[in-house]
Length: 55
Image (cartoon, rainbow, N blue to C red):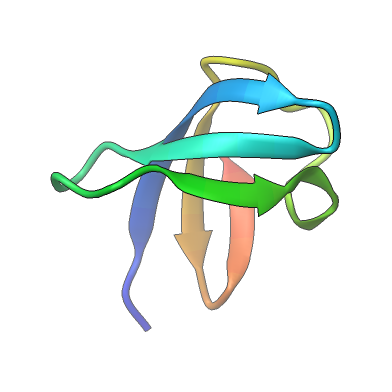
């Protein structure tokens, strides 16, 4: 599986917009339930094996 790096651009209720930091790509709109607890705007994330981790 490919490792991807994101930053939380903004949070809208139960959803968050994630922007890739390792390559140029369109932002991703994802349910906060799939993300680690404690995220906020500006939080850096790593996605690996379909799981997100705060870095």
